[in-house]
Length: 104
Image (tube, rainbow, N blue to C red; front, side):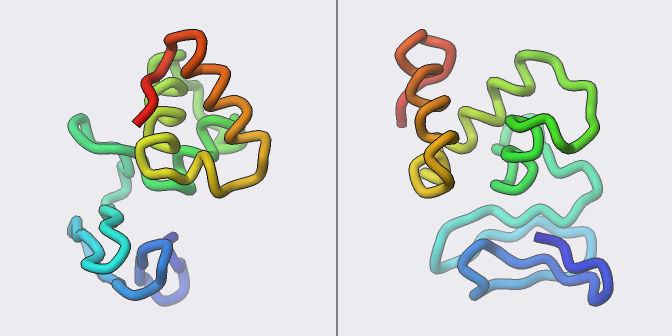
C-alpha cells in the first residue's frame, strides 16, 4: 500500500518498506513490493490491493477480461483470495472450477 503523505510503500505484513522508484521483496512474507506508478509488471503479479480493485472494478480502469483474470490469478497465487472476505474465495473457486484460472 502506498502512503501518499510519506511516499513509503510497504508489504502486507508491514515488515518491509521502500521509497522511490524501486521493486523489492519482503524477506518475511515474500510479497513483491512495487513502487512504480504502473503496478503491474508483464512477468509479475498484481499486488493485493490492485488485484482487488481490478477484480471488484472499483479502480476506474477499463480492463480487458485477460487483465481481470490475471488479477484473480494473482489473488489465488498469493493466497489472498482465501484470506479476504468470502466473496473473493467463492469467486476464485468458481473461476478455478470453470478452468479460467489455475489453483496454486
